Structure formats: structure tokens, C-alpha cells
Image (tube, rainbow, N blue to C red; front, side, top):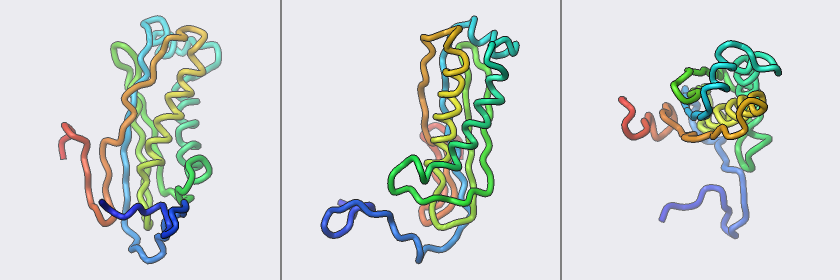
Length: 160
């Protein structure tokens, strides 16, 4: 079994020391979906949600969340991100959200991309729940990462 990197010799939690690692260009892309009924989807598409522009608010929320991962997830390093993007595609039964995070640094940005998707989709739910309380957030996953010692990785079924 591989050594557990977030535990010290006594089994206590610790932040991994990345001080000796080389800086590399790192990129992570994550995705997720929010399923909803046609009324909510139409209201979002048409800008008819009373709380305002759902996708604009969700995009900003996702970007802000990526910047706060070091505060939200124990043992994650606070990172100086170079870029975060959050995009949406309207689908037949909801929205697909894709987020990317990148930097040149000593540790990866997978958690930042995943957090951006999660919070963006939660924001969609919050803003549209008056129209559809049965919305379902699903399928949040890492789909691609690049950089670091392990190089590039693609989710199964995703073209390299």
C-alpha cells in the first residue's frame, strides 16, 4: 500500500510539504450537471428567473469558490491561480457545467476545478429553486488534468 501523504509518522493529519517539488504548468477540468424540468430550464434560458441572471451569478460563484478551496477543504494548499473559467451548456433536461483551473506551481488544481463546478451548480439550484425544487445535481467529476509528476490524465471515455 502506498504511503499516506496527509498523515505523519504518528498518524496525525498534516499538510503535504510541496517545498521541494518542481513548479510545472498545471490544468484541471471538471464537469457536472443539474437536471431540471422544462419550466425551470426555459426560465433560465429566457432570463425569467426573479433572482436575476442565473448563469452570470453561477459563473461568478464558481470562480470565487475555486479561489477559496484552501479555506474550505482541510489540508488543501491555498493557491495563486492563474485562471479559472466556468461555462454552461443548456441540454434537453438541464445544464452541464464545465470548469477549468490553472496555474504554474507545485501542486495540482483538481480540487479548485471540482469546487468551481459544485458551487456554480449549487448557485443555479439556489436561484431557480422557486421554479423547480426537484432539481438534481449529478455527475460532478474530474475529466482531465495536466502537469506535475503524474503528467496528463483523462477520464475514461474522454479522448486524449
